[in-house]
Length: 471
Image (tube, rainbow, N blue to C red; front, top):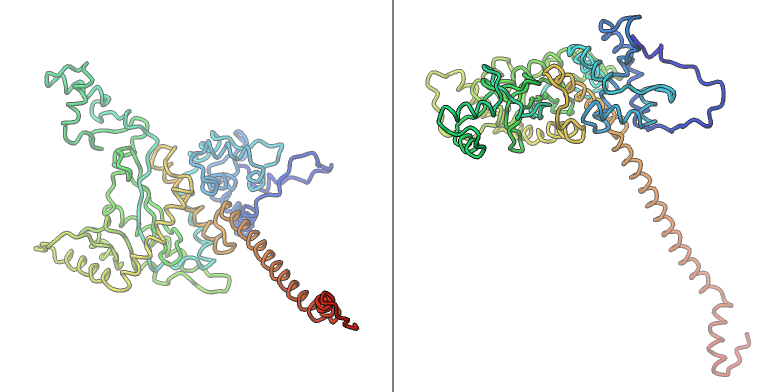
């Protein structure tokens, strides 16, 4: 297994003035300082030791370097591993971030994807937990109140390629068979389309699958399209915005059916961080773990609210208007739903619902909009889960960088520098203007106070009248 220590190189003996150099980006320099201080590479090498052979095989991608490469997708807004590989080959700054010399090849997308496939999802989870520990030591995890929300991402599979689970025939072949059974000309494309439009429930996950990604599920995306997709669900600390748990599901999984799994994952993660102390020796994580859960209307159901109640967690789930309810034989569900309704109508419930958009939706924007993961280019739920975990870990590192240095991404750091320079220029211009005005006032005062000037101006007028001033 390649390690960072093995990759350390002695400085060149001869002057390399002709070699291409770059000053490096201050954001990546500071990020490397944080990772080096936390001994990130040593932890990655220890966690991934079982996936590497000491001697056999081609030169490998060191574990610490691999996880940095995956995080670059978030920081640079790149959506695929092929795009990451192209960016690495072009950037001197990223070479410095990954400690790759100019005479060394950057990893190609085949090496990156193969390394991802070989390292288990449980190891990616350990790396995510390691980043959580750094946040807890920085006081950025409280853990008492978490917010849960999800989003669907289009899978790397096409709806046109779906096949029947029972017969394996394509959608078009299935339509032709139905047309022949009803006496319709199967060679008439227009007739096939008319028949298909009149059919009810054309596709379902019980009957259809993708031959390239059988775990992707048919669902309707937020833009109205029907596609094969996966669902990412995050549990976010409502006080700091840190992502404490990530779960992955099929695209058609209902929010009410997945919330308990995500809450349990978040509770386990927070419980492991209770003993983490900050640099000042304080314990910022709530000693009793997760106590409250906040979610939107999509998560409200009798079973979901009752399940959280059985987990001894107070639910603050927005309730849709369902009219008058019937509770015959459902005393436990009634008590749980009424308790949730009472809490969300209080001041704290309203405050948490307002904060939900700031803490949860903003993280989704960072991860999936500007973070480059707006669609998937990997297949299989395990590979998708690995991508989600590293994306969330990078998002948490961005929160740590933002709390320490004021910028969570390289672009934000660049914009901050530009803003600072513009502010300095504005201040300098204002000082120059004030100095110019002050100098003009002093100059005019000095000219008025000089006797010769007064005499000159007075005598100039008197002389025009033919008078002798005697000055």
